[in-house]
Length: 492
Image (cartoon, rainbow, N blue to C red; front, side, top):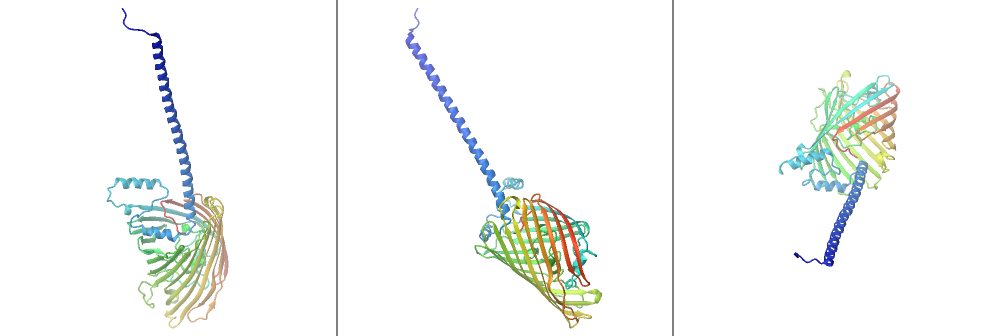
């Protein structure tokens, strides 16, 4: 029985067509897989390229941030930041760290109307340990207080920093800062030592005043001069120049009061400032308690300053300043039952020049810095022996220093400072005296292992004119400094 019709030619043709179709389908699938693989390889190469570019951009940003530390802030940039502070209270960081990422997660988890600015606090600590040795007969602190012409101008009730032979812990500096809200920022710096704790700064500052104005109030470091507004851990040498010791004291001009600044709308940096303080400086604006002296109500101290930084290109930066300080000044010598009350003025000029070689970690960088102060004092005698007599003085002092980065993270520097180039003093019931000057030369070598640790060695040779005689002394200092936590950027 025939169940179907078999045609051999037709069957072979069908089989051939079927096999051909299968081969075409297989080739098509293979082509698709090959195309997909090619696309994956292309994406992989693009991702590798993006990663390389990203790393390069991060390195460039880090280099730029390092250079920004050596550049004067642009007036246009500052003005732009001030104009947007009402809508953007915290500038986005250029590089997110773990802290910022965690904070962002917290912000995303909170309700939309929750305010976080007041909780956004940065906390840091600075440890400053140094070894000190000098060859003076009675100690360097006693020697500095007895410099001819400068030895009896302070109240005597303030504590003075004494560099003791051996190991010293300058202090542990604790810093707290925060962007409080869209209108204010605040920071507090507390110095903790073996003798106790002292508030160095407690500042409230506006962020959104119009027309380039900014108001700061609290206990703050005055904007006069160059080094006065710097904390000791940012100095280029272990100690401060002699002119600061004899005119402002160890703590500098650090007072309770208010400061207002105005940033001029110019293409270069031009800042004006004025301050009013209670006035209780240990050297030039002391307030004494004595029945023979008139009690002056605060504020008793006023300052004005100006800073200007011309545009010099990417590798050069210059900041020049002028300043004036005036206030009540009282002196008491209890052992002699003498007192004096009057007014003191200090005029100053300062500059800092920085050259960035744009190499890694400060290699080839140059910093040159100097300050000059002139003081005129006119006090009226009071008390048992000084009634009707005046105490007058015309004195000055300066320093000049330079540092060079001779290797990545390594610097060497020299400083020359001198006080009493002009040193005319007339004490009550005495003729006008012209005292000699005191000088010191210092050499420093420091190694900045990272952004958070520093090793420094300093050698100094001084020639000091005292009331009794002239004394020469050597000083050797070895410093080890560590910073940890989230620390704010330092001034230029």
